[in-house]
Length: 161
Image (tube, rainbow, N blue to C red; front, side, top):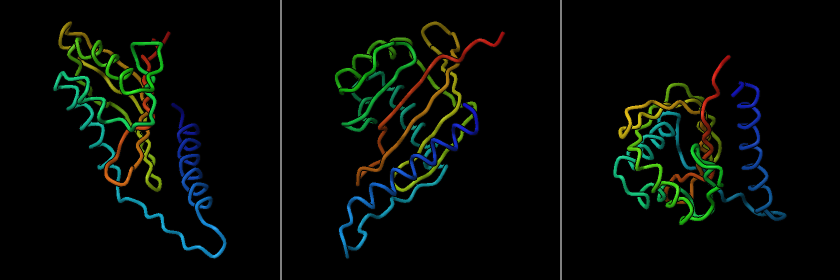
């Protein structure tokens, strides 16, 4: 993903937070929203939490990383996964390959109660021994108790010619 697109995505996340905050304030009301603390290493740890949930082999454990209102645009399926049941269905098939992900390039953008982690990762498929490269974007949102994925897009890396 180009740097311009990443900057635009980060700007949209921050603008969305600002607009959301503005909409909650009435005339003379105090702003009550506080921003949950997180830094780049904290966002990177959220990917590792997701990756470790893959290692359990349990689709329902992986699905717990996603907010109730979230979308998964998966690597190995053309079906958008919105409900928890749809996400579990996808991970039932994906986990059969025994995937283990490793981020190879990333850019993190931080906002108020939102964070975006985008880049490249490689999955080692334990069942076949193959490595599969993909591009990804995770958008995380603080729900008052935990950082959860609200949008996850992954696609196979194109072959350069």
